[in-house]
Length: 241
Image (cartoon, rainbow, N blue to C red):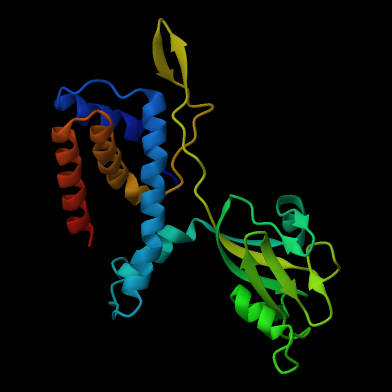
């Protein structure tokens, strides 16, 4: 599932041109497109937090929380130690977190028998000095610091490749979208072969158009375009609630 970046670009250009506010270059569009994609993606987490305490409904396709999990599920990953070895370099006792990971979910060792209890850095340090709270092979603990993830199993620090069979689940960051092109007769023509579509759920196509239009209006210093984008965005949100 994906949203065509060319479809979104053409719709944005059409709406912007109606306001007679000039052309949005591919370079400008790509910058605004990725900002809009991240805004929508990050909003999922806030919306899930708001919806969790609320009662759902029995409708298969309209329960808000179910819809949100469907949209965000595209970005969920469960990876083995082999993947970690290739993508998460080890520095000392820390396993570094690559940019493609947006939020760490669960860390395991001796998959799938021991889930690492993730705590904050202060509690991790306190746990390591008290016999009552020391981690064990059955209850490993870990924390995330500026150097990455650090895990201890009561015997030693655990990193990929240390023989503890690690695993990780996480929420991946959306891949950077790009409207790619070739120049023909001084015009930019869409190149589908090297373009990158939005990774968002197809239902987000309209939201993307309106968000980018609003951002483009700010960039063009065109208050009318900003207003049109904001109005359309709000209307779209009200009709999809």
